[in-house]
Image (tube, rainbow, N blue to C red; front, side, top):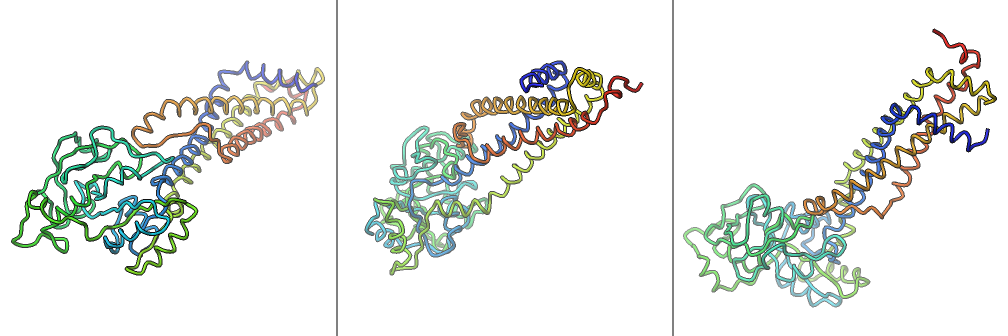
Length: 423
Protein backbone atom coordinates (compact mmCIF):
# COMPACT_ATOMS: atom_id res chain seq x y z
CA UNK A 1 0.00 0.00 0.00
CA UNK A 2 1.17 3.52 -0.74
CA UNK A 3 2.03 5.83 2.15
CA UNK A 4 -0.51 8.42 0.96
CA UNK A 5 -3.28 5.84 0.98
CA UNK A 6 -2.34 4.68 4.49
CA UNK A 7 -2.28 8.28 5.70
CA UNK A 8 -5.75 8.95 4.28
CA UNK A 9 -7.04 5.72 5.75
CA UNK A 10 -5.58 6.55 9.15
CA UNK A 11 -7.17 10.00 9.03
CA UNK A 12 -10.63 8.67 8.08
CA UNK A 13 -10.44 5.96 10.74
CA UNK A 14 -9.50 8.52 13.41
CA UNK A 15 -12.27 10.86 12.22
CA UNK A 16 -14.87 8.12 12.66
CA UNK A 17 -13.83 7.89 16.32
CA UNK A 18 -13.31 11.63 16.72
CA UNK A 19 -15.35 12.07 19.90
CA UNK A 20 -13.41 9.38 21.74
CA UNK A 21 -10.07 10.59 20.44
CA UNK A 22 -10.84 14.26 21.15
CA UNK A 23 -10.20 13.70 24.86
CA UNK A 24 -6.78 12.20 24.07
CA UNK A 25 -5.94 15.13 21.80
CA UNK A 26 -6.92 17.56 24.57
CA UNK A 27 -4.76 15.63 27.02
CA UNK A 28 -1.74 15.86 24.68
CA UNK A 29 -2.52 19.55 24.09
CA UNK A 30 -2.50 20.14 27.85
CA UNK A 31 0.87 18.37 28.10
CA UNK A 32 2.26 20.53 25.31
CA UNK A 33 0.85 23.67 26.89
CA UNK A 34 2.34 22.85 30.29
CA UNK A 35 5.74 21.68 29.04
CA UNK A 36 6.31 24.59 26.66
CA UNK A 37 4.64 27.08 29.00
CA UNK A 38 6.78 26.06 31.97
CA UNK A 39 9.92 26.25 29.85
CA UNK A 40 8.89 29.69 28.55
CA UNK A 41 8.16 31.00 32.06
CA UNK A 42 11.36 29.41 33.40
CA UNK A 43 13.49 31.00 30.68
CA UNK A 44 11.94 34.45 30.93
CA UNK A 45 11.83 34.35 34.74
CA UNK A 46 15.53 33.57 34.84
CA UNK A 47 16.18 36.34 32.33
CA UNK A 48 14.12 38.76 34.45
CA UNK A 49 15.90 37.63 37.63
CA UNK A 50 19.30 38.04 35.99
CA UNK A 51 18.26 41.53 34.87
CA UNK A 52 17.11 42.80 38.28
CA UNK A 53 19.88 45.34 37.78
CA UNK A 54 21.08 45.55 34.19
CA UNK A 55 22.69 48.95 33.68
CA UNK A 56 25.32 48.60 36.39
CA UNK A 57 28.85 47.38 35.70
CA UNK A 58 30.00 46.87 39.31
CA UNK A 59 28.49 46.74 42.78
CA UNK A 60 30.86 47.92 45.51
CA UNK A 61 30.60 47.28 49.24
CA UNK A 62 32.57 46.24 52.29
CA UNK A 63 34.41 42.95 51.98
CA UNK A 64 32.02 40.03 52.35
CA UNK A 65 30.67 37.24 50.16
CA UNK A 66 29.59 38.16 46.63
CA UNK A 67 26.13 36.65 47.16
CA UNK A 68 25.65 38.54 50.43
CA UNK A 69 26.68 41.83 48.81
CA UNK A 70 24.25 41.19 45.95
CA UNK A 71 21.42 40.28 48.32
CA UNK A 72 21.50 43.42 50.40
CA UNK A 73 22.54 45.86 47.65
CA UNK A 74 20.04 44.71 44.99
CA UNK A 75 17.38 42.63 46.77
CA UNK A 76 17.53 44.47 50.12
CA UNK A 77 17.72 41.19 52.00
CA UNK A 78 20.01 40.76 54.99
CA UNK A 79 22.48 43.32 56.29
CA UNK A 80 25.97 44.49 55.45
CA UNK A 81 28.87 43.32 57.60
CA UNK A 82 30.16 46.90 57.49
CA UNK A 83 29.48 50.20 55.75
CA UNK A 84 31.85 52.05 53.43
CA UNK A 85 32.99 55.58 54.23
CA UNK A 86 31.64 58.52 52.26
CA UNK A 87 35.19 59.54 51.39
CA UNK A 88 35.60 56.15 49.70
CA UNK A 89 32.47 56.78 47.60
CA UNK A 90 33.94 60.10 46.48
CA UNK A 91 37.23 58.37 45.66
CA UNK A 92 35.38 55.78 43.56
CA UNK A 93 33.97 58.56 41.40
CA UNK A 94 37.54 59.71 40.63
CA UNK A 95 38.83 56.31 39.49
CA UNK A 96 39.88 56.15 35.86
CA UNK A 97 37.12 54.70 33.71
CA UNK A 98 34.27 55.34 36.16
CA UNK A 99 31.35 57.28 34.62
CA UNK A 100 28.99 57.44 37.59
CA UNK A 101 28.52 56.20 41.15
CA UNK A 102 25.16 55.79 42.88
CA UNK A 103 25.47 55.32 46.67
CA UNK A 104 22.93 53.14 48.50
CA UNK A 105 22.18 53.27 52.21
CA UNK A 106 19.93 50.73 53.96
CA UNK A 107 18.92 49.94 57.52
CA UNK A 108 15.43 51.41 57.96
CA UNK A 109 12.00 50.20 56.94
CA UNK A 110 8.33 51.10 56.72
CA UNK A 111 5.84 48.45 57.84
CA UNK A 112 8.19 45.68 56.75
CA UNK A 113 9.18 47.31 53.43
CA UNK A 114 12.83 48.43 53.05
CA UNK A 115 13.83 52.07 52.92
CA UNK A 116 16.64 53.02 50.56
CA UNK A 117 18.63 56.22 50.92
CA UNK A 118 20.21 57.34 47.65
CA UNK A 119 20.78 60.31 45.35
CA UNK A 120 18.72 61.62 42.41
CA UNK A 121 21.29 59.92 40.14
CA UNK A 122 19.66 56.61 41.13
CA UNK A 123 16.64 57.44 38.95
CA UNK A 124 18.92 58.41 36.05
CA UNK A 125 21.25 55.41 36.03
CA UNK A 126 19.43 52.45 37.56
CA UNK A 127 18.32 49.99 34.88
CA UNK A 128 16.46 46.69 34.97
CA UNK A 129 15.31 44.12 32.43
CA UNK A 130 16.53 45.00 28.95
CA UNK A 131 18.14 48.30 29.97
CA UNK A 132 14.77 49.77 30.98
CA UNK A 133 14.95 52.95 33.09
CA UNK A 134 12.83 53.61 36.15
CA UNK A 135 9.63 55.50 35.37
CA UNK A 136 7.22 57.33 37.63
CA UNK A 137 3.64 56.09 37.44
CA UNK A 138 2.59 59.35 39.02
CA UNK A 139 4.13 62.27 40.88
CA UNK A 140 7.78 63.34 40.89
CA UNK A 141 11.14 62.46 42.39
CA UNK A 142 12.10 63.53 45.89
CA UNK A 143 13.14 67.20 46.00
CA UNK A 144 12.49 68.33 49.57
CA UNK A 145 14.36 66.76 52.50
CA UNK A 146 11.29 64.87 53.69
CA UNK A 147 10.02 63.61 50.33
CA UNK A 148 9.71 59.88 49.64
CA UNK A 149 9.21 57.98 46.35
CA UNK A 150 7.64 54.54 46.81
CA UNK A 151 7.49 51.42 44.67
CA UNK A 152 4.30 50.16 43.02
CA UNK A 153 3.89 47.08 45.23
CA UNK A 154 4.35 49.08 48.42
CA UNK A 155 1.76 51.62 47.27
CA UNK A 156 -0.79 48.97 46.33
CA UNK A 157 -0.24 46.80 49.40
CA UNK A 158 -0.68 49.68 51.84
CA UNK A 159 -3.14 51.68 49.73
CA UNK A 160 -0.98 54.79 49.59
CA UNK A 161 -1.59 57.83 47.38
CA UNK A 162 0.35 60.95 46.55
CA UNK A 163 0.48 63.51 49.35
CA UNK A 164 0.07 61.02 52.20
CA UNK A 165 2.43 61.32 55.14
CA UNK A 166 4.27 58.29 56.48
CA UNK A 167 6.87 57.63 59.16
CA UNK A 168 9.87 55.35 58.93
CA UNK A 169 11.17 52.86 61.48
CA UNK A 170 14.66 51.82 62.49
CA UNK A 171 15.63 48.30 61.42
CA UNK A 172 14.90 46.13 58.41
CA UNK A 173 11.91 43.82 57.90
CA UNK A 174 9.04 43.26 60.27
CA UNK A 175 11.22 43.60 63.37
CA UNK A 176 11.85 47.27 64.19
CA UNK A 177 14.89 47.94 66.30
CA UNK A 178 14.68 50.82 68.70
CA UNK A 179 11.44 52.44 67.58
CA UNK A 180 10.38 54.73 64.76
CA UNK A 181 11.09 58.23 63.50
CA UNK A 182 7.62 59.64 64.11
CA UNK A 183 9.02 63.12 64.77
CA UNK A 184 10.18 63.37 61.16
CA UNK A 185 7.32 62.29 58.84
CA UNK A 186 7.75 62.02 55.08
CA UNK A 187 5.39 63.04 52.27
CA UNK A 188 4.81 60.72 49.30
CA UNK A 189 5.70 62.72 46.20
CA UNK A 190 6.06 59.90 43.66
CA UNK A 191 4.99 56.33 42.91
CA UNK A 192 7.16 54.32 40.54
CA UNK A 193 5.78 52.15 37.74
CA UNK A 194 5.99 48.43 38.38
CA UNK A 195 9.29 46.83 37.42
CA UNK A 196 9.08 43.26 38.75
CA UNK A 197 12.23 43.92 40.81
CA UNK A 198 12.86 44.77 44.51
CA UNK A 199 12.35 48.42 43.54
CA UNK A 200 8.59 47.77 43.72
CA UNK A 201 8.81 47.05 47.46
CA UNK A 202 11.11 49.92 48.37
CA UNK A 203 10.63 53.43 49.75
CA UNK A 204 13.27 55.80 48.32
CA UNK A 205 14.53 58.86 50.19
CA UNK A 206 17.61 61.05 49.87
CA UNK A 207 20.83 60.28 51.72
CA UNK A 208 20.45 63.62 53.52
CA UNK A 209 16.98 62.59 54.71
CA UNK A 210 18.41 59.34 56.07
CA UNK A 211 20.99 61.37 57.99
CA UNK A 212 18.31 63.78 59.22
CA UNK A 213 16.19 61.08 60.88
CA UNK A 214 19.28 59.76 62.68
CA UNK A 215 20.88 63.01 63.89
CA UNK A 216 19.64 62.35 67.43
CA UNK A 217 20.43 58.62 67.31
CA UNK A 218 23.60 56.72 68.14
CA UNK A 219 24.53 53.04 67.89
CA UNK A 220 21.03 52.20 66.66
CA UNK A 221 19.11 53.93 69.48
CA UNK A 222 17.87 57.48 70.29
CA UNK A 223 20.18 59.65 72.37
CA UNK A 224 18.71 60.00 75.88
CA UNK A 225 17.43 63.49 76.60
CA UNK A 226 18.23 64.85 73.14
CA UNK A 227 15.55 65.48 70.57
CA UNK A 228 16.11 67.34 67.31
CA UNK A 229 12.90 68.07 65.44
CA UNK A 230 12.45 68.00 61.68
CA UNK A 231 13.04 71.73 61.12
CA UNK A 232 16.14 71.84 63.31
CA UNK A 233 17.58 68.93 61.33
CA UNK A 234 17.28 70.94 58.10
CA UNK A 235 19.84 73.45 59.37
CA UNK A 236 22.44 70.81 60.19
CA UNK A 237 25.23 69.38 58.03
CA UNK A 238 23.59 66.26 56.60
CA UNK A 239 26.49 64.98 54.52
CA UNK A 240 26.43 61.19 54.97
CA UNK A 241 29.31 59.66 56.92
CA UNK A 242 28.94 56.21 55.37
CA UNK A 243 26.76 54.18 53.01
CA UNK A 244 25.93 50.51 52.63
CA UNK A 245 27.03 49.98 49.01
CA UNK A 246 27.40 51.72 45.67
CA UNK A 247 26.42 51.01 42.08
CA UNK A 248 29.16 51.88 39.59
CA UNK A 249 28.86 52.52 35.86
CA UNK A 250 31.83 52.73 33.49
CA UNK A 251 32.60 54.72 30.36
CA UNK A 252 33.71 51.52 28.65
CA UNK A 253 32.65 48.06 29.84
CA UNK A 254 35.90 46.62 28.53
CA UNK A 255 37.62 48.26 31.50
CA UNK A 256 35.47 46.45 34.08
CA UNK A 257 38.19 44.06 35.26
CA UNK A 258 40.74 46.86 35.53
CA UNK A 259 38.38 48.95 37.68
CA UNK A 260 37.44 45.86 39.71
CA UNK A 261 41.12 45.29 40.55
CA UNK A 262 41.48 48.92 41.60
CA UNK A 263 38.49 48.66 43.92
CA UNK A 264 39.55 45.34 45.42
CA UNK A 265 42.99 46.79 46.10
CA UNK A 266 41.63 50.05 47.53
CA UNK A 267 44.06 51.35 50.18
CA UNK A 268 41.86 53.57 52.34
CA UNK A 269 39.60 50.70 53.53
CA UNK A 270 38.89 47.10 52.53
CA UNK A 271 36.37 47.07 49.67
CA UNK A 272 35.16 44.50 47.21
CA UNK A 273 33.39 44.78 43.88
CA UNK A 274 31.32 42.22 42.02
CA UNK A 275 29.91 41.91 38.51
CA UNK A 276 26.10 41.87 38.96
CA UNK A 277 25.42 39.46 36.09
CA UNK A 278 27.87 36.85 37.34
CA UNK A 279 26.63 37.12 40.93
CA UNK A 280 22.98 36.89 39.81
CA UNK A 281 23.70 33.70 37.87
CA UNK A 282 25.41 32.21 40.92
CA UNK A 283 22.44 33.15 43.11
CA UNK A 284 19.96 31.65 40.61
CA UNK A 285 21.81 28.34 40.77
CA UNK A 286 20.97 28.33 44.50
CA UNK A 287 17.39 29.62 44.50
CA UNK A 288 16.24 28.34 41.09
CA UNK A 289 15.88 24.67 42.01
CA UNK A 290 12.07 24.98 41.93
CA UNK A 291 12.12 25.44 38.16
CA UNK A 292 13.37 21.89 37.71
CA UNK A 293 10.52 20.58 39.88
CA UNK A 294 7.99 22.44 37.71
CA UNK A 295 9.52 21.02 34.56
CA UNK A 296 9.46 17.51 36.05
CA UNK A 297 5.77 17.93 36.93
CA UNK A 298 5.01 18.92 33.34
CA UNK A 299 6.94 15.87 32.12
CA UNK A 300 4.79 13.62 34.31
CA UNK A 301 1.66 15.17 32.80
CA UNK A 302 3.06 14.40 29.34
CA UNK A 303 3.78 10.81 30.40
CA UNK A 304 0.19 10.40 31.60
CA UNK A 305 -1.08 11.80 28.30
CA UNK A 306 1.00 9.31 26.30
CA UNK A 307 -0.30 6.49 28.51
CA UNK A 308 -3.82 7.75 27.78
CA UNK A 309 -3.10 7.69 24.06
CA UNK A 310 -1.90 4.08 24.31
CA UNK A 311 -4.94 3.10 26.39
CA UNK A 312 -7.41 4.65 23.95
CA UNK A 313 -5.89 2.88 20.94
CA UNK A 314 -5.65 -0.43 22.80
CA UNK A 315 -9.26 -0.15 24.04
CA UNK A 316 -10.41 0.52 20.50
CA UNK A 317 -8.67 -2.50 19.05
CA UNK A 318 -11.37 -4.93 20.15
CA UNK A 319 -14.02 -2.88 18.35
CA UNK A 320 -11.81 -2.59 15.25
CA UNK A 321 -10.78 -6.22 14.90
CA UNK A 322 -13.29 -6.80 12.07
CA UNK A 323 -12.12 -3.56 10.36
CA UNK A 324 -8.49 -4.67 10.59
CA UNK A 325 -9.34 -8.20 9.40
CA UNK A 326 -11.15 -6.80 6.34
CA UNK A 327 -8.05 -4.78 5.53
CA UNK A 328 -5.99 -7.96 5.80
CA UNK A 329 -8.48 -9.79 3.58
CA UNK A 330 -8.18 -7.22 0.78
CA UNK A 331 -4.40 -7.50 0.72
CA UNK A 332 -3.05 -5.43 3.61
CA UNK A 333 -0.10 -7.13 5.21
CA UNK A 334 0.63 -7.15 8.96
CA UNK A 335 3.19 -4.40 8.42
CA UNK A 336 0.48 -2.22 6.84
CA UNK A 337 -1.76 -2.67 9.89
CA UNK A 338 1.16 -1.74 12.14
CA UNK A 339 1.90 1.35 10.00
CA UNK A 340 -1.79 2.32 10.01
CA UNK A 341 -2.02 2.38 13.81
CA UNK A 342 1.36 4.11 14.14
CA UNK A 343 0.14 6.80 11.72
CA UNK A 344 -3.06 7.24 13.72
CA UNK A 345 -1.01 7.73 16.88
CA UNK A 346 1.23 10.21 15.07
CA UNK A 347 -1.78 12.15 13.76
CA UNK A 348 -3.29 12.35 17.24
CA UNK A 349 0.01 13.51 18.69
CA UNK A 350 0.49 16.15 15.99
CA UNK A 351 -3.06 17.42 16.48
CA UNK A 352 -2.53 17.61 20.26
CA UNK A 353 0.81 19.42 19.90
CA UNK A 354 -0.66 21.90 17.40
CA UNK A 355 -3.62 22.59 19.69
CA UNK A 356 -1.28 23.00 22.67
CA UNK A 357 0.90 25.52 20.79
CA UNK A 358 -2.15 27.52 19.72
CA UNK A 359 -3.39 27.54 23.33
CA UNK A 360 0.05 28.64 24.56
CA UNK A 361 0.25 31.51 22.09
CA UNK A 362 -3.26 32.66 23.00
CA UNK A 363 -2.50 32.33 26.70
CA UNK A 364 0.73 34.33 26.48
CA UNK A 365 -0.86 37.09 24.39
CA UNK A 366 -3.81 37.33 26.80
CA UNK A 367 -1.77 37.17 30.03
CA UNK A 368 1.25 39.31 29.08
CA UNK A 369 -0.31 42.67 30.03
CA UNK A 370 -1.41 41.24 33.41
CA UNK A 371 1.99 39.62 34.05
CA UNK A 372 3.79 42.84 33.15
CA UNK A 373 1.52 44.98 35.32
CA UNK A 374 1.57 42.72 38.38
CA UNK A 375 4.91 40.93 38.25
CA UNK A 376 7.02 42.89 35.77
CA UNK A 377 7.44 39.68 33.75
CA UNK A 378 7.20 39.66 29.95
CA UNK A 379 6.97 36.35 28.08
CA UNK A 380 8.66 36.30 24.65
CA UNK A 381 6.96 34.09 22.10
CA UNK A 382 9.50 34.58 19.33
CA UNK A 383 12.49 33.36 21.34
CA UNK A 384 12.22 29.58 21.05
CA UNK A 385 14.81 27.85 23.20
CA UNK A 386 16.68 24.66 22.24
CA UNK A 387 14.97 22.89 25.14
CA UNK A 388 11.55 23.81 23.73
CA UNK A 389 12.47 22.23 20.39
CA UNK A 390 13.73 19.19 22.27
CA UNK A 391 10.48 18.95 24.25
CA UNK A 392 8.40 19.14 21.06
CA UNK A 393 10.50 16.42 19.45
CA UNK A 394 10.22 14.34 22.63
CA UNK A 395 6.42 14.65 22.63
CA UNK A 396 6.23 13.61 18.98
CA UNK A 397 8.50 10.60 19.48
CA UNK A 398 6.65 9.63 22.67
CA UNK A 399 3.31 9.74 20.82
CA UNK A 400 4.70 7.56 18.05
CA UNK A 401 6.16 5.06 20.52
CA UNK A 402 2.88 4.99 22.46
CA UNK A 403 1.09 3.85 19.29
CA UNK A 404 3.56 1.03 18.58
CA UNK A 405 2.27 -1.28 21.33
CA UNK A 406 -1.33 -1.23 20.02
CA UNK A 407 0.10 -1.62 16.53
CA UNK A 408 2.12 -4.66 17.58
CA UNK A 409 -1.01 -6.09 19.23
CA UNK A 410 -2.99 -5.63 16.00
CA UNK A 411 -0.09 -7.12 14.06
CA UNK A 412 -0.53 -10.36 16.01
CA UNK A 413 -4.28 -10.62 15.41
CA UNK A 414 -4.93 -13.38 12.93
CA UNK A 415 -7.22 -13.01 9.96
CA UNK A 416 -9.52 -15.82 11.14
CA UNK A 417 -9.72 -14.36 14.65
CA UNK A 418 -10.68 -11.00 13.20
CA UNK A 419 -13.38 -12.40 10.91
CA UNK A 420 -14.82 -14.63 13.62
CA UNK A 421 -14.73 -12.51 16.75
CA UNK A 422 -15.54 -14.13 20.06
CA UNK A 423 -18.97 -13.60 21.49
